[in-house]
Image (cartoon, rainbow, N blue to C red; front, side, top):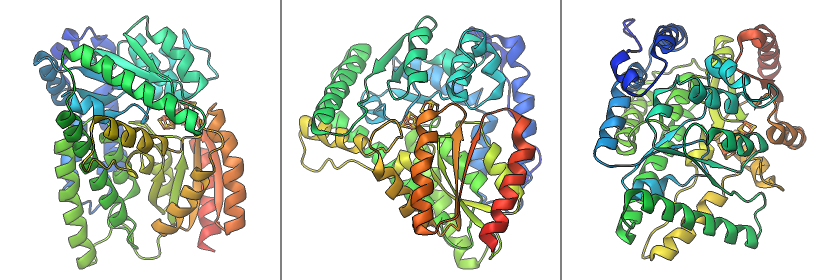
Length: 430
Ligand code: SF4
Ligand code: SF4
């Protein structure tokens, strides 16, 4: 694998987006260093990973130029923070959907000048990116769509609206018939708002195509995840996490093609016995809160300790792609109904009760051939943290080795996490 990796810079482009260019100039070298250390240091990576490396190389340059180009064509560019915001509708309107969740420690201090310190780092990191003008994606979006999933998010949107137009979708907190009715109304309002932005109604055909594009992307991810479950695993957990993160930045059609190319390569590697981890390497599944780019901390620790991560039950993971939408013979209303029902299957811990998530975690554990589960909770995320109690009980009943950890983006707890992960791996190796 080439060692010439570099995250590229384009100060002129950033200045045109009203970024704090002087400050942001430090980011590409830091990201280059981290990426070299965590990704390029791996040996025998699949050749198609070069595409995803290139995506990271151009994440603040080439990809931003593509987005600016889309805006110039009159396409809306919409930032989101949750897999509940229906991407299919953005796609149907020929819009660009960008995931803006923050996974970096670098913007937390900006956020803490305004927000309380004791809230989730993902919310602080995203808010800090905008306040500090240190994220080209945030600077490029026309507006953002937040949601009412958790308290930290829904109150932050009120403040974020002072910096970028911020719309909010009301996500129900339960899954009864009346909650489904509320959610379908929200989905229809969302569609109307996007149509107003583009000045054109979304036709049945547009929506069908939007759904099919996202179905194809999700199915490609399902195929990839099934292949990675092979024992021994043909791809590392770090590379899989990266691909699942890039899913929120890349052009869906292009991303789908590349994921299938990677799947073809992994099938060949499996036939040839060419694996990322040797037979007998401890296999760990991670569940819990999402890991937004560049949050690679836990995977780096687990794989650095000699194990391989074989599944992510997470919104940057299976929760994003496990379900698709049937469009066969359906009218606009029928498709919106199917879309609404598909989204209500997302088992975020913000829902109560949420027992289907517990069952899903156990199912994914069995499907992935993991030997233990590490449940990852971002600090101050009360819903996932409390849900870990039920998860622990279920794992105890099912005799699944389980460990819950709570962490943030700072490097301070790395030593302590390494010790805990190593002890857990000893336990699952028996
Ligand atoms: S964990 Fe919940 S709030 Fe966060 S992205 Fe997933 S569905 Fe949305
Ligand atoms: S991880 Fe938890 S607290 Fe953080 S944004 Fe997601 S749901 Fe909210």
